[in-house]
Length: 353
Image 1 (cartoon, one colour):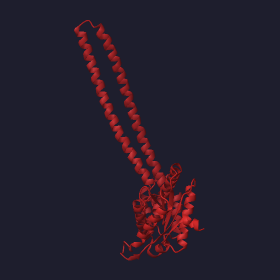
Image 2 (cartoon, rainbow, N blue to C red; image 1 turned 90 degrees about the vertical axis):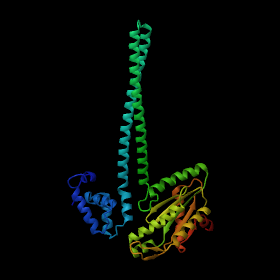
Image 3 (tube, rainbow, N blue to C red; image 1 turned 90 degrees about the horizontal axis):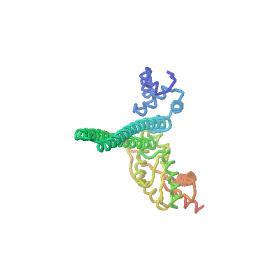
Image 4 (cartoon, rainbow, N blue to C red; image 1 turned 60 degrees about the vertical axis):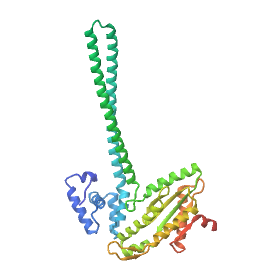
């Protein structure tokens, strides 16, 4: 089944049910669970077979690659997140524009009412000086009372409108903040994703330059992860990634910054910490990861232990984030070459060299 045109249009037209049935058939044939995320991916695959997502998914299928939850998360981050983020931001922007337009009209109406009230007061002042009897004075007082009540009513209406608008703007702000968090969070581990890490690294480097403070980076990688996946399967591999991420996330909590850098690799930013402190933290993470005997969730089989290797580098004055990452990577490779399940301090490595 081949279709053309905008995917969202297809999924809201007569062909949508056919697309849905075909997507479910394909997921079943490839042993993919019909989760909401997977359904979205496969519906796009069916509805737009020439699109970038379909091409990549087709490539993975042709390689016989098991389509795990981790792969689905990576595909969604690469091909769906931006479109979804843009749509949500656009919708929130439209709502905010409508809200501001409504408030502007309410303020303009209040201004007109106040101007009219000012003219009424001016006329009443002149009229009172020229009044010739009690009846004329009473009529003017009644007119002023009526105008005052009208302005008070409109002012209360404006106050309520402004209060409602404040609440709506706050709701939109919270919604956009949630959208931002979703766009910068790795779906499998709930750590920051690569995009968020790159943004935070640039910010941290600028702050270190401004304050003259230390900044150390670390790269961590699960040892022999491919062999583990080949032995136990990718679904179990995802569980291992989550486990390692939970340890890194807990010990790398704010003001430290932890992210899933890609696949089984993680990266951390340590603002204000020198290499000695960071090395101690990484050793603690390494020891805790290796201390637990893991079990396969579906069968309760013993999986043994998993280990990680890590490398770190401290930023030099004016050095770019990419350069520090390269040195941290070199230290990680040194950990791999010298036996794995160890932490290599890039600063000591450089001194020894």
